[in-house]
Length: 513
Image 1 (tube, one colour):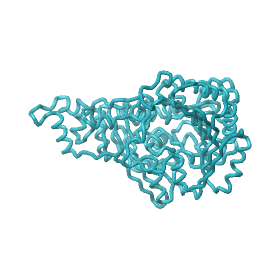
Image 2 (cartoon, one colour):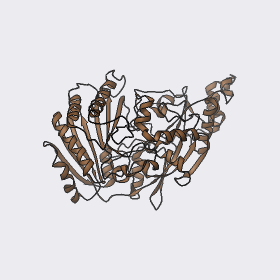
Image 3 (cartoon, helix red, strand yellow):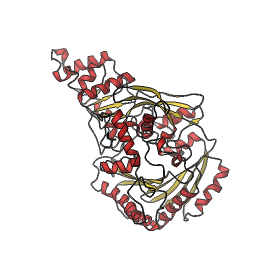
Image 4 (cartoon, one colour):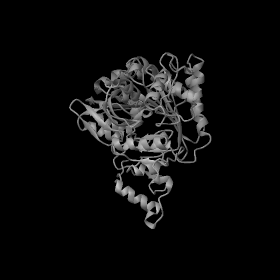
């Protein structure tokens, strides 16, 4: 959420009142010297951070995942590259680490993990030129982006949750149901406005103007700079969008197994690029749903190839609608706007992800064991499993070469999100929650390892993980392998060039070579 920025004069007045200067109390030495305290340095630079002593701190520092609640020293809401550069200078002088926050939906609360949080909520500009190049401020959320582009007949491929910010989403990839025809959100980015760790600011940085830095930003941006504007090549809105659902109420493990295998096989071999697909498993349900971005008259023949292999007993729903209405449908809301709203909801949860190789399909016995684990768990947590179709022979995602983008993997098939909230969606998070999710993962990975999957993520037979579903339980060796694969060494070398002191730091960030 954007908040008003205090002027330097107001900041000075607040500081005087807060420290008791008005009553003759001297400014403490640790704040009087800008080199000795982060807050003091920021104030002396004319900036106005939110700090722990302020009444706004609790709401401003509230984590989306309540299970993990960092306590940053200061939160800043800059409005210019100069202010960001000054803040980075203060962090460097005082040995503070910096995190950037866009939408604030980091699964591990990493956008709050720094000593200094640079919140980009004041960067809410969205403009589109006649060629469909959208300049999107890094403080925007997806719902507002969809609405602004729709007004001029443009669209992008990105996620379904309207409250997710573009910053981390595009910064680390950004998958949505249209991604099989248009790519990840990062694949659609053609330029950046960015401030590097040393304070150097770039406007309209492109692949041709700085190939190495563009490559690093395009899939690993938060490790290399504070991006303030993404320049995205938008697409003409499809004339038609057809939403569909094949829903099973209280399926058996065998029925869910048959349905997921049919989904996976169809997605790998037959699904056109303009068919977005996701399979969702809940406590008593299994559903295949998505959007066909094409004429409804063609949808029936396309989806029939899937239906021929599905077990019976499902409820079918098919509806034609506009592009923007399909975005609302996927988000589960009639109002995509997030202006003036705080986080739509908070949660207390743990999640893992699994990206599967395209070369070795899921084995029936393993999938059966997976569903039996889920359906007999008796867990009181609020859990779900979401399985997105990333790849397949027609997917744009897998047509992009690793040399074009820092995103780790271009040869995977499915991406599982394994997710469990507390019974109340709040704290405390139950002790069984993490082992329960880990058990989901182990059932798939350990089972499929017997059929040839390997933990070398860069191998055609290797499994991996999706960095935007960040898992704080991973070791750093697992982070390097599962999130980045063969891309890590180049990223590490570039980190040594652009941020050798790790000013922009998170527990799972790229480390300099």
